[in-house]
Image (cartoon, rainbow, N blue to C red; front, side, top):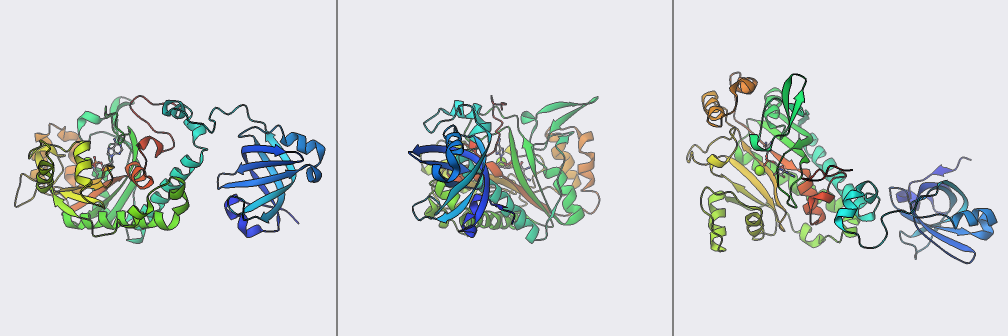
Length: 432
Ligand code: 4AD
Ligand code: MG
């Protein structure tokens, strides 16, 4: 009978079976005629016991040469053992060494962040990075399912674009044959076109911001999931954002508890983050900050610290709506009752993780939109197609963007977004 190749996370289904594990050595030690290795295969870790009596002199000696991260294929019998991490061990009967690794630069000791970032390609093999990236994957899967289950159509938007979406100061410019192109800051403007064609759509892809900020919340390249809904208004997308975030929290608690525990995340705090999420206006937020002794007034932007102070007043995400229109993007609809306010919203994560969602209602009258494009000094030619959307069956519509890395940082309880993506792009970091 052919011996099955088994992933370590499915090992419990194979008690008493002879199986094959393909992986890498995390640690190894020997005592007398026994060798013990922790082998990882990308799905989990397994203790492998190598006995000289079983594998013979030659293979046992070979095992003695296995360094950290050496790659191998082990055949053996799965045995239940309550003392083993994970509850199972493998009694090796045969070893096939693929490569003996050179001394691995990352040791089980403390390394500086700079060193680890330079070895990011190897750092990904650690239990911690593994847990974070598995949670990231689950967050993304949960978001996609959320929109798919609600009848949204996924329509991805271009990365090379002829114009700005979120302002001209943070554009990455590149050559596009004989033209100039910019890397997309957001898929929103195209999302609006797809919403007029499909009703409810979302896009999910990398977005780019040349932000000269070196904070724990900023990346130059980050992934954003952006729903856009025809006939929706500000309250509709506030509700959608709340439902999405609540579903993501629940999904992670249900399906990635082990990983949250690896990261020593405070699970009880996450358990308590259930809807309804508080909603406050920008003006109320300003008052709350003033009461905390912050010097801030109507019209000012919130800094990262302000966001933290505000969010700390709540034990779950808070939605702040109706910011002053003057400081916001050109496309934002204005409150008909208070035209100095934009019909927009941000969701701030608790525990100091800052803004995770930004969005709102879009201008749908053509005159108003042309006026704003001019007022923001944007090239009207480039926005001709965008204005067309207001010419042919224009309807109120709204949407938002959620930055995946901020959500990962928050749900994992990380200090910095640099660990939330496999290869982060930061102000001075382009390697590896
Ligand atoms: O608030 P922003 O700039 O909104 C937009 O781009 C809208 N066009 C989205 C829309 O309505 N469809 O960005 C949305 C989110 C932020 O709330 C934040 O989570 C994330 O994107 N984000 C960043 N994440 C990491 N690094 C950066 N430099 C980020 N800038 C924004
Ligand atoms: Mg924003």
